[in-house]
Structures are given as structure tokens and as C-alpha cells.
Length: 225
Image (spheres, rainbow, N blue to C red):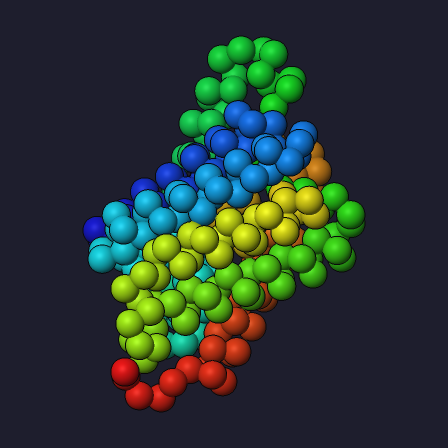
């Protein structure tokens, strides 16, 4: 049970701090807000990787859990329960963020809960989410692999930095999800277009995660270094 709770806590922190930064900075209004939001998501992952990595592996993302599962790194039971607790963590984070925003009527009007939406249509959004998630999950699988030398000693840093880069690319197009749980939570409170487009931010990351697992199977070293 500890590893499931760790995933809940980790996803809560990622969603609350990442989306919270997007709300506080008004992400998308200028370059500084985009960079600040990207860095926040990356640093949240680094922090959680070194906090709960030894407990659950710090997936805090259903797309990563799927990729790990396809590669045989997790059981079916753990795969399902990881995803369930990740979504719960994201919903709780979005609820807290919504509660904070709702304390002042002006905040409700000028900000959101950090939900995703396809700025240039669902086809564009789906393609962006698939490609970015594939890159992100590939980094996760490679950085944490025991057959890939000593790279797993710095996995948390590599994963966090790659998430910053991915957000810098994706925020303009979709707000960047690459994480179904992180999108489900805010969308439930945001409603509107965020909820209408939610399927993109579930399907895209899952497709990208599965593709990353397939790519990693092709290039993964066969012997532990």
C-alpha cells in the first residue's frame, strides 16, 4: 500500500506545484510565464524522484506506468492501482488549487486550474501529445534501466530536465500534458473546452507511452553493465 500512496502523493505534488505555477504566473501570457511553468513541472519531478523513487519508482504518470508495464517492469495489479492512485492524487491537487482560486472572485475570472486544451485543433494536439510523451517516457525508461550503465544514478535529474524541455515545446500547442492524471484532475474542475478535449490528453500520452516502450525494446542493452 505504501507504493500506491507514494504515487498518490507524488502526483498530487506534481499537479499542485506545476499547475499552481501555471495559474500563479498566468502561463502563456508571456515568455517568462512559459519558462517558469516548464521549470516548475521539471523541478517537481526531480523533487519527487528523490523523495519517493525508492518506494514506488516515482512514475506519477499513467503513461510512464504503461511504458514500464509493457517492458515487464511492473505487474498488472500494480499497473492498474498505480494509475488509480495517480488520478486520485491529481484530482485532490486540482481540488485544492480550485479551492485556493475560489477564495477570491477575481481569481476565478482571471485564472484557471491549469487544465489542458488543444489550441490548434484536436488532431494537432493529439500529434503533439503522442510525440512529446514518447520522448519523455523513452527518457524515463532509458535513464532508469539497470542495463544502461550508471545512468540510473542521475535518473531523477535527467527526467526532470527533459520534462522542462518538453513543456517549453508543448505549452504553445496544448499546455503540455504528457500525463493523463495531471490532465484529468484540472479538467474536472475547469470544464468547458478542457473537458471536451480531455480525451486527447488521455489517448495521446497512452499512445506515446506505448510507442516509447516499443522503441526501448529495440535499443535496450541485453546485459547489465
